[in-house]
Length: 417
Image 1: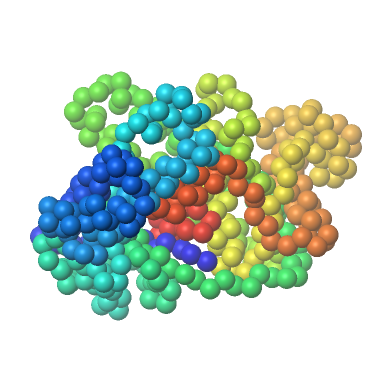
Image 2: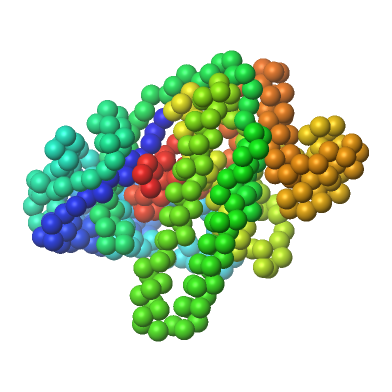
């Protein structure tokens, strides 16, 4: 299993300046190489290297390894674009969005992620230092900081390239770690059903409701504040917007990590598996009124599901994905399916047997029952089938350097995010 561990750098002002120049030059060179690739229609690694390698080293002062990684990053970006076009993520051929995507070369942000291999970056984990190549020379004593668990994973399992990232004035290294899979429990005594929702992020079949209205209220508050600041549109409001731009996402990620850790720990402690709904393609299936769209779009169910899945794999807890159809309308006691059973968002009353329960808990019990039935029939840990859109997103995530090291998928989760 691959994990991406986030390590923060603590450079001195002189070291930070050297890292900044290095990142900017690498991305300027990548943008120039992208223009050549677009003009010559040469988007494969070795043919493009023949066209740009020499001038790239001379013009931007890049080392041999750095130049090769810049070229590979450029080719990966075009590969991701091709996958997105094929998956239909950028509209149909001939549409305005499609023409815009294919009608100009890819441009890289000045602070976009840049990959470093072991020739360019060496780790002294016990001393909490790294030695890293820059265009100003090698920096041999750059301090790093991370939690004990992250450093232990880094020391034992780091393998392959690491990405240098600058975000909100801070410097990070995203290091790829390959952790051996733990053999899943082959004989769980039962399953913990987990119903994922918008009002209540997660509700278990044990009756535990986690992080519901508090996060919803904070999201509404943040959304109103952003609208107010955008409307005012002054220099100070722009500074405040820039400062707060990732606050909501960070809060949601932190809450999802805590929920996932709690669910997996309870399943491991009781010898049970975890049952989740297969919500693949739900954004495309659901039609919403305009006031509901922002709330639905900010629902991070995929992230929470991914966190639960990878933490379960590390703990050896089996995970089952079940069909979500009618879980909210089905009575967990008698099996009656009726739309009228769902009286309100929070209340479930069966029209057949009169059973009353919290609506989300009733759904989670149905999810648990479906997973247990699948397991008894001989199914084992499953994963939801990816949609064409998700396959395009998976390709984008495989090119983390090209897309800014977006690493929150089942196979690549950022630790300590």
